[in-house]
Image (cartoon, rainbow, N blue to C red; front, top):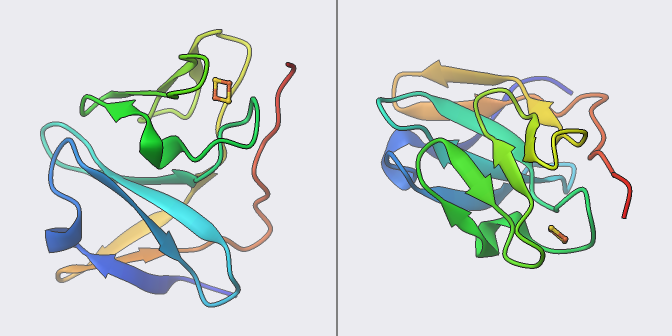
Length: 112
Ligand code: FES
């Protein structure tokens, strides 16, 4: 596997997020950061099987709707609790296309 297009910049504006599926069936949550920049992270919360896209995203931090765990989308690290993290996928922008590479990256799970 390598980088592949999952969406365009028009699909994810600043402060927005959306789930896209790669050709191998990996669900990737694409987020538009405040001030520009795109991040790609695992779509499922590391806590339990909840879709992160159903949570709240303020352009910097993503809050899971289930138990309000919060993640810094820029780094993938947990804000609260701070001993968790979400897997990040490398992102490449080509023109208006957003490409991700999910090779060898598995979603993280955390303590419950
Ligand atoms: S499932 Fe996301 S915080 Fe519990």
